[in-house]
Length: 164
Picture (cartoon, one colour):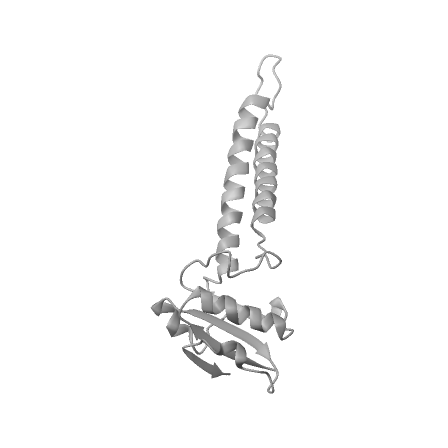
């Protein structure tokens, strides 16, 4: 399996190439689209949605942060009990404020971590291609995983093509 690349000047050319690839039987997992600017929804058909772990990771971070901060308040209060004259050792209003702060910081940290991971910013995944320098010129790069005998008619509107 090799990758075939094409650089397009406009999103309309990309849409035509994606239609051609879809009619040739390529799946969405075989196609990679890169752009330095956000693409309109007409480039991605409704049946192909971009999936992100962001909502689940933010929720998980909020639950973990809230639980950790509540346990910190509870265990600290029980480890160093102060006589409060008949009041509970762990009072709920102050514990609720600290728990809310834990929820917020957990959601924020998990969201930032997920953004960094999904964008590949720390360099965890090396995803550079041979034509990525075209992205600086506001072009759109389409890369397709295909066999050696694949048709290149989908790249008819491309500025330049390359084979890896």
